Image (cartoon, rainbow over all chains, first blue to last red):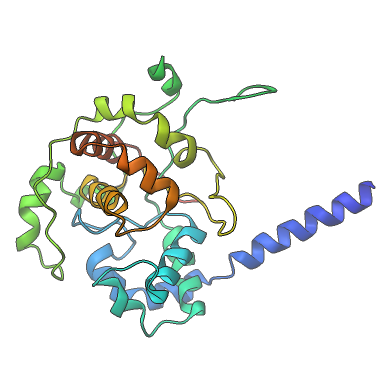
Length: 116
Length: 138
Protein backbone atom coordinates (compact mmCIF):
# COMPACT_ATOMS: atom_id res chain seq x y z
CA UNK A 1 0.00 0.00 0.00
CA UNK A 2 2.76 2.34 0.98
CA UNK A 3 4.55 1.59 -2.24
CA UNK A 4 1.38 2.25 -4.19
CA UNK A 5 0.84 5.61 -2.59
CA UNK A 6 4.45 6.53 -3.29
CA UNK A 7 3.89 5.68 -6.92
CA UNK A 8 0.75 7.78 -6.87
CA UNK A 9 2.61 10.74 -5.45
CA UNK A 10 5.39 10.44 -8.01
CA UNK A 11 2.82 10.18 -10.77
CA UNK A 12 0.97 13.20 -9.46
CA UNK A 13 4.17 15.21 -9.27
CA UNK A 14 5.19 14.26 -12.78
CA UNK A 15 1.77 15.33 -14.00
CA UNK A 16 2.25 18.70 -12.36
CA UNK A 17 5.60 18.93 -14.11
CA UNK A 18 4.03 18.07 -17.41
CA UNK A 19 1.35 20.67 -16.86
CA UNK A 20 4.05 23.33 -16.47
CA UNK A 21 6.03 22.33 -19.49
CA UNK A 22 6.77 25.85 -20.67
CA UNK A 23 10.31 27.02 -21.11
CA UNK A 24 10.83 30.42 -19.46
CA UNK A 25 13.91 31.22 -21.53
CA UNK A 26 12.01 30.61 -24.75
CA UNK A 27 9.13 32.55 -23.30
CA UNK A 28 11.32 35.54 -22.65
CA UNK A 29 12.35 35.58 -26.30
CA UNK A 30 8.74 35.34 -27.39
CA UNK A 31 7.55 37.97 -24.94
CA UNK A 32 8.81 41.05 -26.76
CA UNK A 33 5.46 41.93 -28.36
CA UNK A 34 3.87 41.61 -24.90
CA UNK A 35 6.19 44.18 -23.35
CA UNK A 36 4.57 47.18 -25.05
CA UNK A 37 1.49 46.81 -22.88
CA UNK A 38 2.40 44.44 -20.06
CA UNK A 39 5.95 45.63 -19.40
CA UNK A 40 9.12 43.65 -20.14
CA UNK A 41 8.71 41.56 -17.01
CA UNK A 42 4.92 41.61 -16.89
CA UNK A 43 4.63 44.56 -14.52
CA UNK A 44 2.60 46.86 -16.71
CA UNK A 45 2.96 50.59 -16.32
CA UNK A 46 -0.50 51.53 -17.60
CA UNK A 47 -3.22 50.47 -15.16
CA UNK A 48 -5.70 49.35 -17.79
CA UNK A 49 -3.31 46.60 -18.84
CA UNK A 50 -3.15 43.84 -16.25
CA UNK A 51 -0.03 43.05 -14.37
CA UNK A 52 0.85 39.45 -15.29
CA UNK A 53 4.21 39.10 -13.56
CA UNK A 54 3.96 36.38 -10.96
CA UNK A 55 0.51 35.27 -12.10
CA UNK A 56 -0.20 31.54 -11.92
CA UNK A 57 1.22 29.58 -14.83
CA UNK A 58 -1.94 27.65 -15.56
CA UNK A 59 -4.14 30.74 -15.36
CA UNK A 60 -1.97 32.50 -17.93
CA UNK A 61 -2.11 29.50 -20.25
CA UNK A 62 -5.87 29.39 -19.94
CA UNK A 63 -6.25 33.10 -20.60
CA UNK A 64 -4.14 32.85 -23.76
CA UNK A 65 -6.07 29.81 -24.96
CA UNK A 66 -9.36 31.54 -24.32
CA UNK A 67 -8.26 34.59 -26.30
CA UNK A 68 -7.29 32.31 -29.16
CA UNK A 69 -10.51 30.30 -29.09
CA UNK A 70 -12.64 33.39 -28.71
CA UNK A 71 -14.03 32.24 -25.37
CA UNK A 72 -12.56 35.44 -23.99
CA UNK A 73 -12.96 38.41 -26.26
CA UNK A 74 -10.56 41.31 -26.35
CA UNK A 75 -9.82 43.48 -29.36
CA UNK A 76 -6.15 43.82 -28.42
CA UNK A 77 -5.39 40.29 -27.32
CA UNK A 78 -7.18 38.44 -30.14
CA UNK A 79 -4.74 39.48 -32.87
CA UNK A 80 -1.79 39.03 -30.53
CA UNK A 81 -2.49 35.35 -30.00
CA UNK A 82 -3.76 34.56 -33.50
CA UNK A 83 -0.38 33.32 -34.69
CA UNK A 84 0.74 31.72 -31.45
CA UNK A 85 0.56 27.99 -30.79
CA UNK A 86 0.09 26.06 -27.54
CA UNK A 87 3.85 25.74 -27.12
CA UNK A 88 4.15 29.53 -27.28
CA UNK A 89 1.44 29.85 -24.63
CA UNK A 90 3.30 27.48 -22.32
CA UNK A 91 6.58 29.30 -22.81
CA UNK A 92 5.10 32.76 -22.29
CA UNK A 93 3.25 31.60 -19.20
CA UNK A 94 6.43 30.02 -17.84
CA UNK A 95 8.33 33.28 -18.29
CA UNK A 96 5.77 35.65 -16.82
CA UNK A 97 4.79 33.39 -13.95
CA UNK A 98 8.39 33.35 -12.81
CA UNK A 99 8.74 37.11 -12.62
CA UNK A 100 8.34 39.06 -9.42
CA UNK A 101 4.94 40.65 -9.30
CA UNK A 102 1.47 39.61 -8.22
CA UNK A 103 0.99 38.07 -4.81
CA UNK A 104 -1.54 36.43 -2.53
CA UNK A 105 -1.81 38.13 0.82
CA UNK A 106 -2.36 35.70 3.60
CA UNK A 107 -5.75 35.25 5.16
CA UNK A 108 -6.69 33.11 8.09
CA UNK A 109 -9.18 30.37 7.59
CA UNK A 110 -10.43 27.44 9.53
CA UNK A 111 -10.30 23.77 8.58
CA UNK A 112 -11.92 21.02 10.66
CA UNK A 113 -8.58 19.90 12.04
CA UNK A 114 -7.74 23.34 13.37
CA UNK A 115 -6.91 26.87 12.40
CA UNK A 116 -4.51 27.63 9.59
CA UNK B 1 -14.88 40.14 12.89
CA UNK B 2 -13.78 40.20 9.29
CA UNK B 3 -10.78 42.32 10.12
CA UNK B 4 -9.56 39.51 12.32
CA UNK B 5 -9.15 37.41 9.20
CA UNK B 6 -6.29 39.64 8.25
CA UNK B 7 -4.28 39.34 11.39
CA UNK B 8 -1.29 38.27 9.36
CA UNK B 9 -1.97 40.40 6.31
CA UNK B 10 0.40 43.02 5.10
CA UNK B 11 -0.89 46.40 4.17
CA UNK B 12 2.27 47.78 2.69
CA UNK B 13 2.32 49.16 -0.80
CA UNK B 14 4.11 47.20 -3.50
CA UNK B 15 7.80 47.52 -2.74
CA UNK B 16 9.21 45.76 -5.75
CA UNK B 17 11.77 47.61 -7.81
CA UNK B 18 9.62 47.72 -10.95
CA UNK B 19 6.95 49.44 -8.92
CA UNK B 20 9.07 52.57 -8.80
CA UNK B 21 7.96 53.38 -12.30
CA UNK B 22 4.34 52.63 -11.53
CA UNK B 23 1.76 55.33 -11.19
CA UNK B 24 1.09 55.75 -7.51
CA UNK B 25 -2.63 56.29 -7.65
CA UNK B 26 -5.07 54.71 -10.06
CA UNK B 27 -6.90 58.00 -10.52
CA UNK B 28 -3.74 59.85 -11.50
CA UNK B 29 -2.61 57.03 -13.72
CA UNK B 30 -5.94 56.97 -15.46
CA UNK B 31 -5.66 60.59 -16.48
CA UNK B 32 -2.09 60.02 -17.61
CA UNK B 33 -2.89 56.96 -19.67
CA UNK B 34 -4.09 58.67 -22.86
CA UNK B 35 -0.70 60.34 -23.27
CA UNK B 36 1.32 57.25 -22.54
CA UNK B 37 3.18 55.51 -25.34
CA UNK B 38 0.92 52.50 -25.20
CA UNK B 39 -1.26 50.97 -27.89
CA UNK B 40 -4.74 52.36 -27.75
CA UNK B 41 -6.98 50.58 -25.32
CA UNK B 42 -10.58 51.13 -24.41
CA UNK B 43 -10.45 54.05 -22.02
CA UNK B 44 -11.77 53.04 -18.63
CA UNK B 45 -14.98 54.80 -17.91
CA UNK B 46 -15.05 57.24 -15.10
CA UNK B 47 -15.09 55.24 -11.94
CA UNK B 48 -15.71 55.85 -8.30
CA UNK B 49 -12.72 56.44 -6.06
CA UNK B 50 -11.97 53.27 -4.20
CA UNK B 51 -11.30 52.92 -0.50
CA UNK B 52 -8.95 50.06 0.28
CA UNK B 53 -10.09 49.76 3.89
CA UNK B 54 -13.73 49.60 2.82
CA UNK B 55 -12.71 47.03 0.23
CA UNK B 56 -11.06 44.90 2.88
CA UNK B 57 -14.37 44.61 4.69
CA UNK B 58 -16.14 43.65 1.46
CA UNK B 59 -13.58 41.06 0.41
CA UNK B 60 -14.81 38.01 2.28
CA UNK B 61 -16.38 36.58 -0.86
CA UNK B 62 -13.14 37.14 -2.81
CA UNK B 63 -10.45 35.85 -0.48
CA UNK B 64 -11.99 32.40 -0.15
CA UNK B 65 -10.83 31.68 -3.69
CA UNK B 66 -8.25 34.31 -4.58
CA UNK B 67 -6.22 34.18 -1.39
CA UNK B 68 -6.08 30.49 -0.57
CA UNK B 69 -2.74 29.10 -1.75
CA UNK B 70 -3.20 26.37 -4.31
CA UNK B 71 -6.92 26.99 -4.74
CA UNK B 72 -8.27 25.99 -8.13
CA UNK B 73 -11.51 26.53 -9.97
CA UNK B 74 -13.98 23.70 -10.16
CA UNK B 75 -14.51 20.93 -12.65
CA UNK B 76 -14.48 20.64 -15.64
CA UNK B 77 -11.89 23.31 -16.38
CA UNK B 78 -9.44 23.21 -13.53
CA UNK B 79 -6.87 25.95 -13.15
CA UNK B 80 -5.49 28.21 -10.45
CA UNK B 81 -7.64 31.13 -9.43
CA UNK B 82 -5.69 34.23 -10.46
CA UNK B 83 -3.68 36.21 -7.97
CA UNK B 84 -5.04 39.69 -7.40
CA UNK B 85 -2.76 41.29 -4.84
CA UNK B 86 -0.76 44.01 -6.56
CA UNK B 87 -3.07 44.11 -9.58
CA UNK B 88 -4.00 47.50 -11.03
CA UNK B 89 -7.28 48.87 -9.68
CA UNK B 90 -8.42 50.07 -13.08
CA UNK B 91 -7.99 46.59 -14.51
CA UNK B 92 -9.83 44.93 -11.64
CA UNK B 93 -12.81 47.24 -12.07
CA UNK B 94 -12.91 46.62 -15.80
CA UNK B 95 -12.79 42.85 -15.21
CA UNK B 96 -15.60 43.02 -12.65
CA UNK B 97 -17.73 45.11 -15.00
CA UNK B 98 -17.12 42.63 -17.82
CA UNK B 99 -18.21 39.76 -15.59
CA UNK B 100 -21.29 41.66 -14.46
CA UNK B 101 -22.34 42.46 -18.01
CA UNK B 102 -21.69 38.92 -19.19
CA UNK B 103 -19.04 40.08 -21.65
CA UNK B 104 -16.51 37.98 -19.75
CA UNK B 105 -17.81 34.56 -18.77
CA UNK B 106 -17.30 32.70 -15.57
CA UNK B 107 -20.30 31.47 -13.59
CA UNK B 108 -18.91 32.21 -10.13
CA UNK B 109 -17.52 35.59 -11.08
CA UNK B 110 -20.70 36.60 -12.83
CA UNK B 111 -22.67 35.84 -9.68
CA UNK B 112 -20.21 37.71 -7.50
CA UNK B 113 -19.92 40.72 -9.77
CA UNK B 114 -23.69 40.95 -10.19
CA UNK B 115 -23.95 41.61 -6.48
CA UNK B 116 -21.47 44.49 -6.52
CA UNK B 117 -22.19 48.19 -6.94
CA UNK B 118 -19.77 50.49 -8.71
CA UNK B 119 -18.57 51.64 -5.31
CA UNK B 120 -18.06 48.05 -4.16
CA UNK B 121 -15.98 47.35 -7.24
CA UNK B 122 -13.87 50.45 -6.70
CA UNK B 123 -13.30 49.58 -3.05
CA UNK B 124 -12.35 45.98 -3.79
CA UNK B 125 -10.05 47.12 -6.57
CA UNK B 126 -8.36 49.57 -4.19
CA UNK B 127 -7.99 46.82 -1.62
CA UNK B 128 -6.29 44.42 -4.01
CA UNK B 129 -4.20 47.13 -5.69
CA UNK B 130 -2.84 48.03 -2.26
CA UNK B 131 -1.74 44.46 -1.71
CA UNK B 132 1.83 43.29 -1.62
CA UNK B 133 3.80 42.10 -4.58
CA UNK B 134 6.28 39.36 -4.13
CA UNK B 135 8.69 36.99 -5.75
CA UNK B 136 6.74 34.76 -8.06
CA UNK B 137 6.11 31.11 -7.51
CA UNK B 138 4.69 28.70 -10.02
